[in-house]
Amino acid sequence: MELKVDTHLQQLTQILQQSWRHIRTERMKATLKIQQAACDAMRSYLKSVGFMELLPPIIGPVTDPGIRGAKQVTFDYYGREYKVMSSAILYKQAAMSGLGKIFFMSPNIRLEPIDSASSGRHLVEFVQLDLEIANATYFDAMSVAENLLCAAMNTVKDECKRELELLGRELPTFSPPFKKFTYDEVLELLRKNGMKVRYGVEIPWDAEYLISKIMDEPFFIIDYPRGARGFYDREDENRPGILRDFDLIYPEGYGEGASGAEREYRYDRVMARMRETGEDPRKYAWYLEMLREGIPPSAGFGIGVERLTRYLCGLNAVWEARLCPKVAGVYSP
Ligand code: ASN
Image (cartoon, rainbow, N blue to C red; front, top):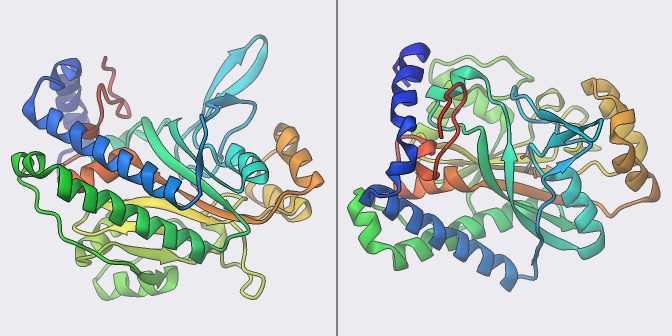
């Protein structure tokens, strides 16, 4: 974090040129063992409470536009334009409308800004456990998120003692429910700690780091203002301008681990929000047709697998939690 972006990029490029060798180190083997245990635990937990796992579509005519400053990847598909999924949100709603409670372990691609290379928290290619629940509120989704995190942590503590010891990581025990702070409360707390954040935008990385550093347990930030998120996060009927959404934040400075929301699923409202966020509705033809026919209300979230692994293992950077990681601006195997 303290390195200048250029120097950091050069050093990281040198390290990541050798990424295919990293898998032979004890550190990386322990990390991936822990990742596997966490993923197995999350899958079993979700299946035990009635979720069905589906294989994720990873290309299509449109993808999630709500990716906070990152760019989408576009490619030629037999003379037409296709996107690589930046998140499976649109397909999650389609799947939920047929199956009720679903999840994907979904690869996502986002061309993050170059300065994300030194954030320790961004990968261009990552995997998200992305779930959606029909007829649920964002409070229902948060309850699944905290249970999911606890299931992963408890399993790792039970099954990966040797690996945690090798990494020098001691994991505490948490029990739900986690604390919830509104976006407004977080801005206030940041101000008290000498950091000003403009109202109405996403909380910047350095401010999120600070708030995460202050806390000693995972917690939620809820109720972001409308300008900060994509068209699919639902606005509260009784509090115009406030979204029924959330981020799950890890403590100790690890920052955001998951984000989710209750969905706007009504055709007219989605059209209005698309106009507001500058999206071209013509590109979303299949999605809008689905909404016009009608889908159930829902809520869901995505939890980043490599960020979870970084937190569980106590790693400096998220790229340490992935085989042959792709970091913004770094050309590597
Ligand atoms: N997965 C997130 C959600 O369900 C969306 C995202 O990754 N941008 O809301």
